[in-house]
Image 1 (cartoon, rainbow, N blue to C red):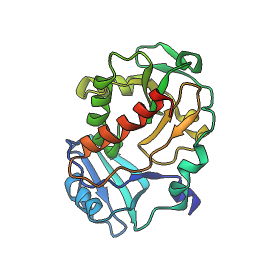
Image 2: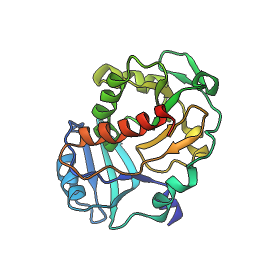
Image 3: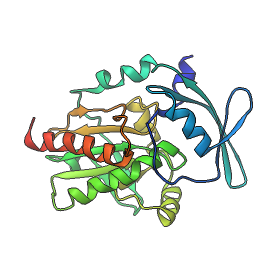
Length: 230
């Protein structure tokens, strides 16, 4: 069971309004195949729930994810916030898609949002429009930094940016750092204060009609509070 929980894809969101790769397919334990739209309908019918990813296979340009829906959130997810709140963010040194290194020293005195994601994660991609709105809101505030860490390499991230817009600073090869923070579900979001302490780790979003607005408003409040020193 522990190994299964380590493969949690994400919390379920209600509802989801975003474009996704039409070549993403999902297969349940009875071997029934779902398109993303059909799969999303299952997720919208269950709140709160968790989608557990058991395996992913690829065939040409398609991906097939074997999944299971849990009717309640696993303790590993429920306790995730408590595990990290008020802890110092571990040091890191990662390289962005342009080959420039980013370290903890670069974040000194800044309010930081770190989004853990990967390009094949449908819920991660759904969240991105709301994240881009955050970048736009704080574009003139040099005290706010937005980072997105993926276990994938620079080439994979660069290829993604050729097709989709993601305005965070994308850091590659962050798998070991994700493990250090015990990130087991995606997307995962960490909000860091000016002193380098983790102050918020939201593990879900409000069940409202416009998911993009939900992400933007809930994350904006966290950032505003950290800027005020709350």
